[in-house]
Length: 161
Length: 161
DNA sequence: GTTATTAAGGATATATAATATCCGTAATAG
DNA sequence: CTATTACGGATATTATATATCCTTAATAAC
Figure 1 (cartoon, each protein chain N blue to C red):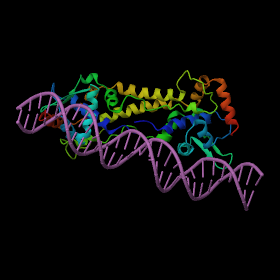
Figure 2 (figure 1 turned 120 degrees about the vertical axis):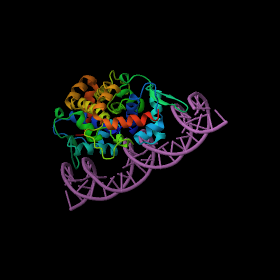
Figure 3 (figure 1 turned 135 degrees about the vertical axis):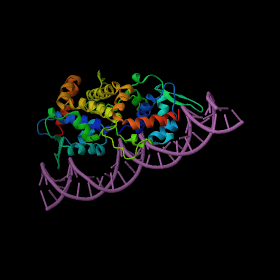
Figure 4 (figure 1 turned 180 degrees about the horizontal axis):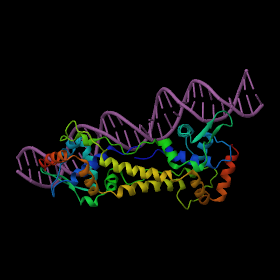
């Protein structure tokens, strides 16, 4: 049980888009080349982000993607859920109802106790992701990435925007 | 991306085993019938629990499973990890290294900033699961389950131990 | 207008993992 | 000796993830 690799790709793409000069866009082709991933498949992830209104695509030459709102207003959770879906990773199939001792008419007033615990843990995961935004990430990256690489990459991007 | 249904089954089986009279065992066959799930496949989940030393199997007629330690010392996380594995659900494939601007010799002193956030969220999920034990669950179930069903099920189990 | 480029989305193929079943083995209680 | 059990290996089936291909409509540049 693993998150899709598209989640990783989407996060990295958003990190790049967050650093783009104002109003500029970057195409799927360039994002794919920058990250060394297949353009066609990455495109699906970007489309998911677009549908979730996290990024905004535009057509034609000089078209491409940019963030739909400021980095401070986009959380990791937004991006993860756009790609992976918002459903809990624990699915309760109500096997308690298969208990042969159970009266057929019996109705439960609460969801299964086991599911409640699993769902609460899922919420803890989501909370952790909700609390980190793209601007937080940008600050971290600025410290992590060597200045030379940072500058060279910015130049590479500038040539294509 | 969903947890395996075996996780749900394993948790329910452990809940039953936690309520078993001292020293008694219950077989895969009975656990499967009680939960309405395929015996052969459930067996794989129970084997995983056995390998993780959460339950203890014994052979022969009147054999079966019982918990390997007290319910207070078995957490949801123990059970989930036994079935689902302990690896983080986010896998970093280091796509940052595919950046064409990156000097080929460059070595990173830290793991990718995006991965760090994702891994922290994974830890939050695990923490929530680590903090709930089978004895906590037993207390909750006692309140949730109607006394009549509780008693009838206990009887059903008693006939088979 | 014409052309090249782009996002968007549908259709389809391939690979991997989840789900499920079957069988052989060794242990063990009656 | 027999029936029952956990355990593990092998295999089949189904679902999902991964990936590619193709068509369409928009649009910027010429």
